[in-house]
Image (cartoon, rainbow, N blue to C red):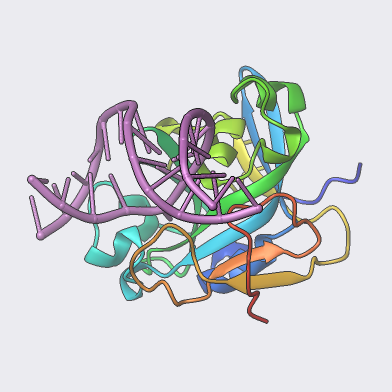
Length: 205
DNA sequence: TGCATGATGTTCT
DNA sequence: GAACATCATGCAC
């Protein structure tokens, strides 16, 4: 299988909604002592820092959100609802505190390890469906936050799409938030409808 | 097939 | 004390 190149920092140094769309189809790899799990992204969500009431960074810098105010191309892993981890990628420019939440993907490397990290009996199609499930597959927790994802040797990295073709992109309202609900900043790859949270009922072109 | 609900802890008001 | 970028289960239709 052809492997894409590790995406450079400049890829993330743009508006979060652009980055979120371009990330669809890209591969996220997490390497630990247990092995490697890689996931092809099929669903992402953009958050625009201080300008976005739905963003964690909306109220300004706090110890928790400090990473988002740093340089782009880094990970922001946060703990939510008392039991789940979720992975974000910080976007630029520095100080904007914008980020992309990785909502869903398809496991392409390390199926056995990914399955072992999830509840027994979970169908493969759902292994990485949902932000917390995606993070669970990759074996992430708080110690994976604030890592550069642009380093080829790092434990966490993002590769460009193996194939040349970009997936068709659907856009829709974001999920699980109560503010700025109408902003259509959730993006999903149209070619992979099986892996997804609540379906995009009315895709916005 | 679809909605309501419980688990569970950190962060902010 | 309330809210929260969630998930899985259970029960109603």
